[in-house]
Image: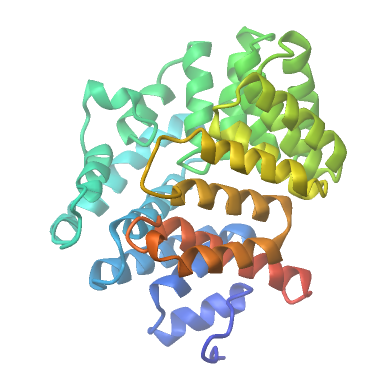
Length: 352
């Protein structure tokens, strides 16, 4: 089986065909990562992540943030070997060795003017007390995995969700915190959010409602509850809760994103625009619009399910001259992939 030019990668058979061709592009390999993630095919996801990273290291046209995105997927794939929190530390040497073997290739990337690659490698390879505050640090992950106190179990749960993509272990970490402190709002919130990640929506709602019963002003719990409502098909409730979160913490980007996404899902276009324009007005004074804010709004459109508006906004944004040097292309690439995937799924061509 061979994929034709431009054919989307929709299922594991397509992934196998890309691997067999030996000529996949960076974008195709990252699409394979996405497909394998949804199919829970972790070995193939690992292989796709390594191939995407190799393509990014070879291709001068692939920017450092895109390389880092692919390399983070390698980290996450290796961490998938851990079945319990205690096994996370056992994965760290293999992760570090993988990067040691490729260190020269990473550091030879010619266009890393902001030293983003160097900082990423530092977070993976160095044990330093300062890194204990950096959520992307492997050192932080290992430290938290070995700290039994509820406070650190909550931090571990949040870290496992993002950037290490282990919501299943995030549930375990938060559950351990709750065994000692049953009314810990942060633990209930992060466990509820992690359960939303793994589509355990009923239990997620129980956790998040419990958190809000203790602290009804928790913007984090409100944001997660809004997302849970939306995924349950409860668009009006999702928007109502998102509005409350935004009123409590109007400068928080998660509250802003959630409000726009909930408004999109509920058909509240006017409120969406109010949030988007308010966000732009509240940004620091620049020579023009902030592309990061525009991308945030497009992400919310995708999350809210208005794919046509999201796609049109993305095309318009890329056409603007002022965005060409400042547009976060790694985010744009992810948005393109997600929009295409969701459109194919709606058309009934996702065979998973």
